Each structure stands twice: as C-alpha cells, then as structure tokens.
Length: 98
Image (tube, rainbow, N blue to C red; front, side, top):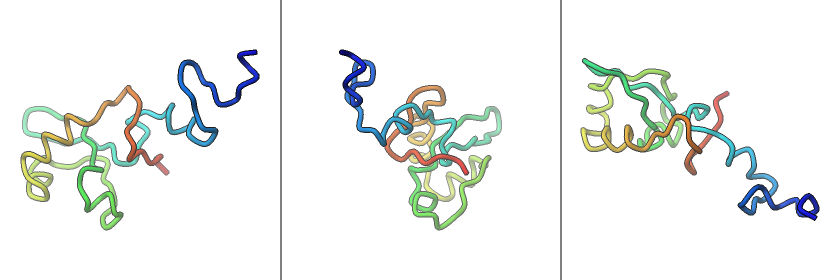
C-alpha cells in the first residue's frame, strides 16, 4: 500500500516536480561561492545580493571578501555566510549549476 501513493516520499508529501529541488544541496547551487578572506575562506550564498539574484552579474566561483563588503556591507556578508549549508538541503533560491 505504501508504494501506491506517488506523492508520499518518506515522511513528507512531495509534489512530483519538487523532488529534484528537495534532494538538492547548497553545493550544487549556482549561487554557492567561496568568499576569500585574509585568514580564512568560507562558503557563502550570493542569492542574498540582488545583483546576482537578478542575473545582472554572473555569479563567480570565488569572491574576495573586500569586494563583497564593497557591494553589500559587512552585515550582508555575515548573513550570506550564515545562510549557506553546504551539505544540507538547499533553500528556496536553489538554481542548479549549468
């Protein structure tokens, strides 16, 4: 009986087209980038910046921390670094890398 319901996936109800999004991780997202600082490098989500979210600029693989601060400020940098979860489920801004 469990296999009869195509919408049931584990313990969650899933719409058929959302399965790929639900199994995706942040590392596979095109907004996932490495922010290079002086002492350490951290992954960040560039979907927090409208410049990259709207497609006005191409999303880089690596971005200098000083450039990120110049574009959006320190608070946005902290928010972008805290938002990314490399191994866990991606957020609603997920867009696969091409």
